[in-house]
Image (tube, rainbow, N blue to C red):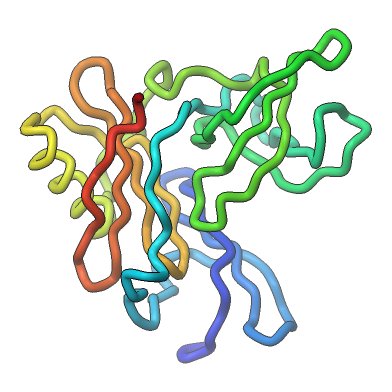
Length: 201
């Protein structure tokens, strides 16, 4: 219903549309809504904007169609599931270790909440190895970040890799140049963006 206040728990692009997991403030119903029906109440203050930092960014690959990659509380299938990722979702790898015959990697999801968990390493690949998201149907936040990265890098060869919407802002990953070097930018409802940062060391 118009005017209903909900908490945005994160968004992802699927089949050309952006879907957001939402929950009613104060408890109640939870579910998914198309982002076109959600509006940010106000831009956050500078003190509440998420920190932008570099890291080892990789993408989820090899997940069977219609399935998800389980994110677990620890390295191994005996640990509880704390989240799920789909193909092409970007993550930051904190570190990896062997657990039996499987290499497990601790990851941080690239969202404003920065949730952490563990995934099987065979499902991770360098972020630049994946095919970028087509730029048709690009949101105004994504366009703002594409422009900001173009200015910051002085390189007009930029493509949208991914985006994630939340109450704090829209986090946009942009590929630059023929190697699609990953850059991160956050756009806000007032049209402003953070200064883009390279995700390579």
